[in-house]
Image 1 (cartoon, rainbow, N blue to C red):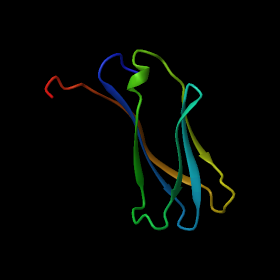
Image 2: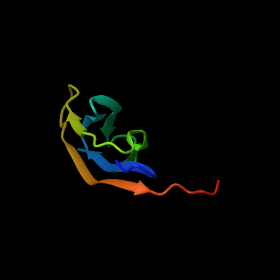
Image 3: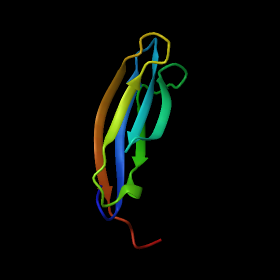
Image 4: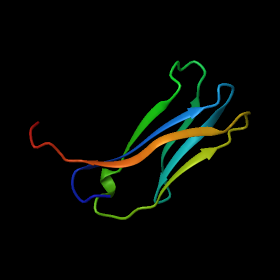
Length: 93
């Protein structure tokens, strides 16, 4: 993670039309995100997530993204556009 600026993990996820799955994002073993990804009712096919990693500035960290089964059916996930971006902090507020 960059020592300066705002570092963000970005990922897009989707589920099968008839199923859902649980997304977990862990950093250094700490669970930062746990959410069910589904297509029903949301209207949108893809969900875009942003996870701020700035509190780990200046460190090398393990990041783990998981697709967990949640006792349903069709529990496979679609993943796209996974990236880590660093954005400079604006001096103007």
